[in-house]
Image (cartoon, rainbow, N blue to C red):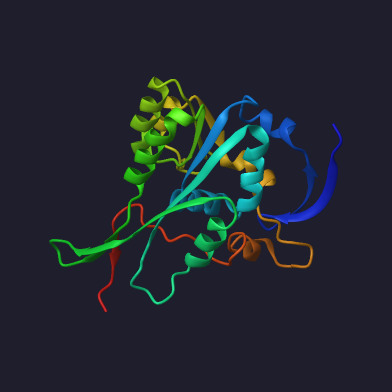
Amino acid sequence: VPSTTVLTYCGGLLSFRVNVDQSAFGAMMHFYPTERVALFIDGANLYATAKTLGFDIDYKRLLGLFRQKGQLVRALYYTALAEDQEYSSIRPLIDWLDYNGYTMVTKPTKEFTDSMGRRKVKGNMDIELTVDAMKLAEQLDHIVIFTGDGDFRALVQALQERGKRVSIVSTLQTQPPMVADELRRQADQFVDLADLEQLICRDQGMQRQVPPRQARGARSLGPESEPARFDDDEELDDV
């Protein structure tokens, strides 16, 4: 199979990347060409996983990769927004994804005060992702969920009982692993995000001669922004 070798910065490391398509990815995760596929992306969880692994995701490359593997029906990206801020750092990313093939699912965060008088922010998107996956299941054959959250094990099981194949994308290459063991075991296939780095990481470009430590802190593709993390209750200091 013909391939092209290019010199790139990926994850802040200067490397040779071989442009291969389905042959390399096929060893990591199996798709049938006629499968109807949908991606369900837990935005905060995926961002945290990639950051822990030390690279930034190129969302255009991510979408293109799965378009090669089957009939991609939809790619849904879930994230919570703090709407009371004058400017949200995640807004440029949301706008870019919305105009470039992703379906954005957002909701405002909720702020409350606990019994100890501490301000907290809550913005969990698990319910929205679960409901959408169950609603779309009849139009799909293969469901790919980007998360390591063990709370999704019941969703994976329910989808499998409907005859759907379910794959989980997270990582075991961190200490502790970002994926819950029960979720990984329930899935039909588990794909380690670390194995996809050279296929979906953001190229830093030859013109950016920066040290690896600095490059690994670079922001994500398109807009220079990163998702806010509101998976669990988050404490805020009173001002």
